[in-house]
Length: 391
Ligand code: HEM
Image 1 (cartoon, rainbow, N blue to C red):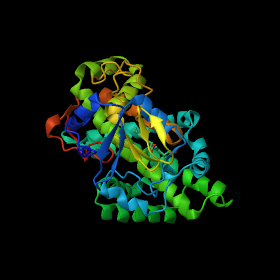
Image 2: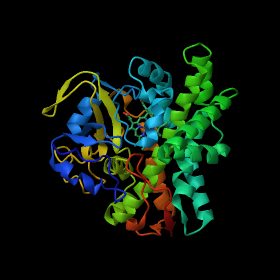
Image 3: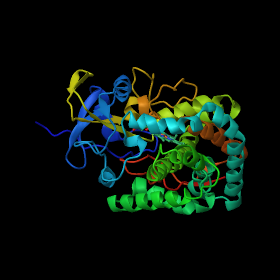
C-alpha cells in the first residue's frame, strides 16, 4: 500500500493553498495524510464535512489524548503543558469560555469602535512617519491588533516587544522555543495579574478568581491565548489582505469606491486566505461515518481550511477573489463549540483598518515582488514576517 502524502505542505503564493494540495482537491472530502512524526491521520477538505465534524461531540480538542494529530514538531511540547480552553472539551471548555463571552459581544465591540478607529489612525501616522519604503508588518499590521488587544485585556502596550517576540516564537520557533516562549508569556501575565490595570484580566480576577471559579494559573494561561490569538492572527490577515488587494487591482478599486464593500471584502479575504490552514485539529472519541468513510475512535482529524473554503460545491469559481460574493459561511474561524471567540473583534479591526490604509495612502504598493516574499512554514498561522511597502 502506498504511504499517505506528507502533510501539511507549504504555500508558494501567500493567498493560494499549497500547490501540493492539487491532487487532494480532486479527491474525496476526507483523505489520509502522514504527519511529521509518521502518524497517519485524516485531513478534511470538504466544507460540509468540516462543519459537521467540528460540530460533532464525538470529536475531542484535547491534545493530551494519545494519537492527537500535532501538525508540527514545534507544537509537540505543548501536549505536556496545562491546556488552555482552546484545547479542552466541554463541559470544562464551555465553563471557561462562558466566563469570557460577555467581553466578546457585537455590542461590546460597538463600544470599542472609536478606540479601534483611533488606533488605526495612529498606526497610519506612524507608518507615514517611518517614511517610504518601510515594513508594513512593523508599522501597521502588528501595532493595530496589538494595541487593541492590550486595551481590551489591560496589558501595557509598552511591553509589546516582549510579547510580540515570544508570541512569534510560540507560533514559528523550534519546539524548545515554543516551551520557553510559553513559560515566559504565562509568567509575564501571572505577574501582571497580581495588580492588573483595568481590563478583561482585572475583571476575570475580580469575578472569577476571587470567587474560586478560576485558578490564578488558569487566568494567566487563558489570558495568554487571548493575547496571542488577539494579535498574531489579525496581523497576518492585515498583511496578506494588503498583498491580495494590491495583486487584484479591480477588487481594490471596488473597495475604494464603495465603503459598504468593506464587510463583504473582509469575509472574502477570510475565506480566500484561510490563515489557519492546517487548521483545527481533533481526535475522534467514537467511530464516525462521514464522507463515505469510517473515522475510527482514536483517529486524528485536521481540517485543511484553504480547501474547505474553496469547496466548489459551496463557493462558485472558488479560486477567484471576488469581494462581492457572500462568503460569510467560510470556516476560517472554525465551526462548532470552539468557533473563534474573537471573530467579531477581528472583523471590526479588518473592516476599519484596510479601507483606512488605502484611503490615507492611496498610492500604497508592494516594494517587493509577491514571488520573492518569504512565507511562513506550512504548519502555523499563515503570513509574512515582514512586508516591504512604498508609496
Ligand atoms: C482574523 C483573525 C482570526 C482568525 C482567522 C482566527 C481563527 C480561529 C480559529 C480557526 C479558531 C478555532 C480553532 C479550533 O477550533 O481548534 C479560533 C479560536 C479562537 N480564537 Fe480566533 N481567529 C482570529 C482572531 C482572533 C482574535 C482577534 C481573538 C481575540 C482575542 C481570537 C481568539 C480566539 C480564541 C480565544 C479561540 C478559542 C475558542 C474556543 O476554543 O472556544 N481569535 N480562532
